[in-house]
Length: 416
Image (tube, rainbow, N blue to C red; front, side, top):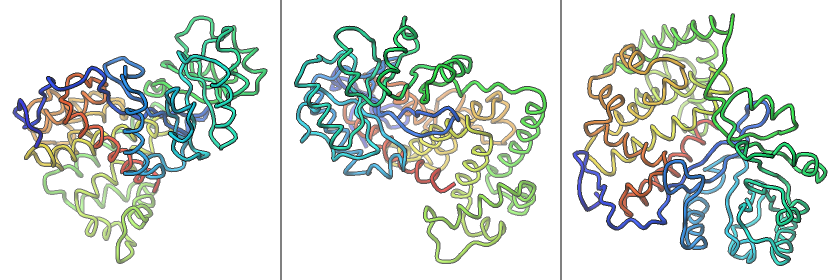
């Protein structure tokens, strides 16, 4: 347990030894025009709303993050076959020996405030020859930045930056891929897509627009999903009732059997029926599998949000087990249900009531109190990039938990 001033959940929140340059690690999804999750950007944020942290020693900080991401977890475990974008300090760009080995999956982001000179341009050319792709982050076209276009593969434009549309003709002349950042509304996504952007960052997909028959189908699916969740999260689930509910959704059954027999859940014997899956997987594993598969069926927008839900739930489980005496499995449920309203587009208190969850779990989700609630609050603090609210030792533990949880979520989703 971390030493220091303790909350009632047993978590140290003493920030007296937290440096101003402390930061939280996060992965932000990048999707294509079909809303497929094709890449992630690794972010370090020091406070809410910050796009990046204020880091005193960018070389040391970047090296620490990459040591965890590459050597402890591994690129494939963290993002699978998706591309990974990362900010590289100028020192890394000028000295390629500081960079991780070149890979077709890695995209180096050149920050908007970098000093552009001949040594930098020559280094970018060498990095592209070595197999890296170069992205210009928060790009603003002017005389200082213009030479970078000849050495770029991807140009990221901030949709909140005035004048970005005026730069498009010259940027397109360089044959680069256009990535729209901070796309927060579906209408802006459609506009950018029509203008030739092929990659997108933002949370526009969290605001689904459903009409007509789609709305009725969504309501029908939603009702069935609530019934299934209610049965699944009973203190002692009725396996016969679960089987009856599952067989009403043949696609879910097929997916559950395929995933149960995948490499992610190595078993000595093949599972060939829903009854076997219910009997052999165990309640806790079954909950995570069915929840994942059920939500993945809700369309591409849910698939983009699902990793965040799984990471939050896994972090709650991990941190409950290592920092407190709270039930880790209950903590997983708290983390998962705290975001379920966004994926099911419903009122959170109603969802919690419908699922017949315990009062302790409902209170933890809605009020963030009690041992389980404090764990959720800690994870949300990390999500919001509020590094200055965590002690240095706790922040290091939570960042590591984030990367491990992201690896688990990627492995689970990769088996779908």
